[in-house]
Amino acid sequence: MNIERIQRIANYGSHWILWVLVIASVVALAIVIERAVLFWSSRDNLTRLRREVRALLAAHDVPAARRRLDGSPSFEATVARAGLDADGAASAEERILAERELVRLKLERNLGFLGTLGSNAPFIGLLGTVIGIVRAFHRLSESAGQVSASLMAEIGEALIATAIGILVALPAIAFFNLFHRAIKARLGQSDALGHEVLAYLKAERRAAFSDAE
Image (tube, rainbow, N blue to C red; front, side):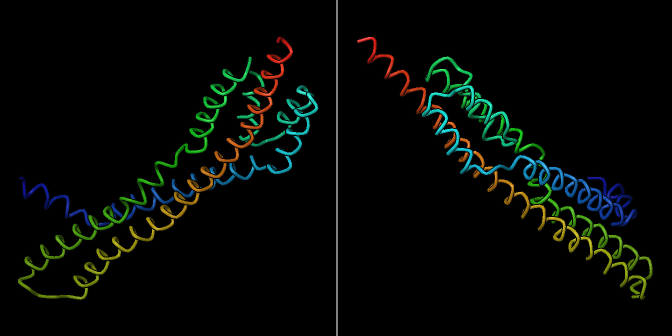
């Protein structure tokens, strides 16, 4: 291992680590805002939507049910709409599952960055602390053991890097978990609405078989 190379890296100090954490936190904030806007803009009264779609399907008014789903901004309506576009219950189930997977991917977009940042930001901060401590000990060696105020300030600055890393990680993990709980709820609502469509299509198929007999 090249000790001199490590020493050269340590000579840069921990400032660049702090800048890495600041830039990462800005990116994380942008992701949080973008995801929050997406979740907020795709909201709908799903209880009412499900009730209205069920009533329209019970009345065999499929075009009206399609229009009602098209008028909803929610991803849940998109999943159910895919089922109504299918030919029969079997293909509807496959289309619903396919659309549900696409919706899940859209909702989870960029959340991996939040999870990665939340898991690794403390270690990035710790790296800055280690670099700062190594640099401080190097200066202590050059000064023949003379402890100065500037040396203590540098050690304190190195310790700040770990604190910043933890402060960046905590909200990143919190929002990561919050969004994943919201995604789980949204996908559950999608399943419920999609099953309303499947129930109608299966009932129609049974009625067709009964008429054929």
